[in-house]
Amino acid sequence: MIDITIQNFETELIGASMQQPVLLDIWAPWCGPCKSLGPVLEKLETAYEGRFMLAKLNSDEQPEIAGQLSQAFGVRSIPFCVLFSQGQPVDGFVGALPEAEVRKFLDKHVPSIDELEADAEVAEAEQLLAEGGDIDAALAKLQEAVAIDPSNDGARIDYLKLLLGEAATDPARTAQARQAFEPVASKVLSDTRYAAIEHWLKACEAAPAARPMAALDAAIGANRRDFEARFERAQWLFAHGQTTAAMDELLEILMRDKTWNQELARKTYVAILELMTKPAAKADPAAGAAKGTLELTGKAAAAPAADPVLDQYRRKLSMALF
Image 1 (cartoon, one colour):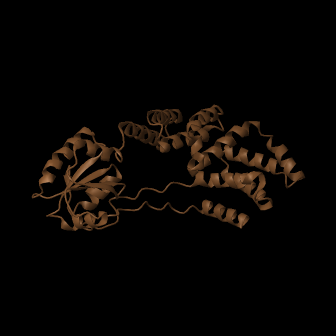
Image 2 (tube, helix red, strand yellow):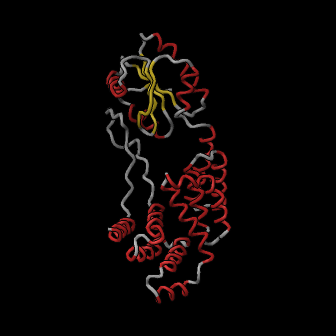
């Protein structure tokens, strides 16, 4: 538990919430209900074993922060609790709720033990890969993360990407990827990450049966509109990590027939762009606002640095389509 002031608001509340949820208890010494809620919150901070951090703010001593939060949520009474996550105030409640109700509130936002264990496995896998460690060990970590928390999309996507990245030299990885993908196959309709993974998976499944490259080149040379051969070539290139060459082949289809095979060339091209796009990095919570300033909205995610290759191939797609 920590006391929040205008001086430490940025680091101890906004910054800390980038790492774990922080529940801010706004109270005052004269408030009777505050005195009954406080011990409940302290008990739950211990019971949740680090899954959230409790912070307290004396509204009499810090009226600027209390006033802005009260205005943001339309609240005029205390105790008033606000949950911060990823630098943002995301939810809150008013009054001295009983312990069971506070637990219900926390459980909507606080990661479960399984989620924390899975995240730890993912972090260890990322460290192994960053240090050039054993791929098999990293895969085992990610597989364990998915087993612990099957709903962890980040862990599953990392696992699938690592498997498919190894599939060109180890075809058995493709079958493993298919097995890991099937439980979430329905998500391709709502999540562009899974839609991209599905196209990559299909390319890896098709690659072993592809005709020799010389035969494909001969077929395309004989008929520039042999889209089956072009797509077969693009899938082989995609499966073997030659993403820009794969997109070049897909562009040849798009420039001749945008709607070929239910827009399969466009969908595959977009999937490659999605896979090549790096996720936005989290902003450094220590950077930005000067000490002593108040910024309730926290820091937005840092925009990824421009990738000239990605920008070039996005422009090529736009020109081909429009």
